[in-house]
Length: 253
Image (cartoon, rainbow, N blue to C red; front, side, top):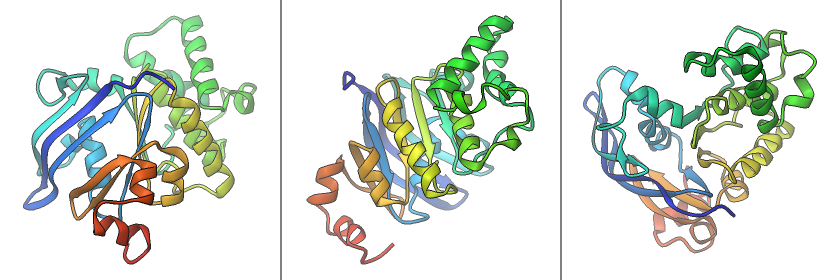
């Protein structure tokens, strides 16, 4: 297992959408070399929390936050510009969202934006990223076909490759398998397991079995609050808070 160091620290985070408070006083630490799963019922603040880490909420009208989000000790809402932040903190969304371009151009897009123009180096980045996303063998002979010719599961792995192509250190995944069939879901879970040796991963999932399979740490959100966090095994087998126990045993959610 990779060295475990503090990668992300969130302190006293409040988030509002207009007058509605979506997150209430969140404090959470995320360690490197581990997968941290955010679990809880729909609408509890999991995805809103994930989006605060790379400032995706900035684009939502009326969104405002207070508190601190630190990546490697640097406040991402203070001393770090958004372009640098999003290069270091990649994001994979719930539904595959490839660009209307070729498979190759989807992966090359980010490196081009960041100034990489040399064809041979771009080709190397594309191949490496597709290999990391366990997609290379399936697409190496059709790189110049539209990304839309791929299956849903392949499109999601392409989006993961696209996120990896700019060399992030942290990968945020917002229910990355919820739109996929069981076989494609298993591929994504296997991929998360492989990637955790190289990346710090935070994954939102509504699927408790998936959280127990892919994560080593877990955090339970409810009504905008972080109820408790700890190792996945402790959270699932010996929750400290009755609300966590009630959710895990299916009493609500």
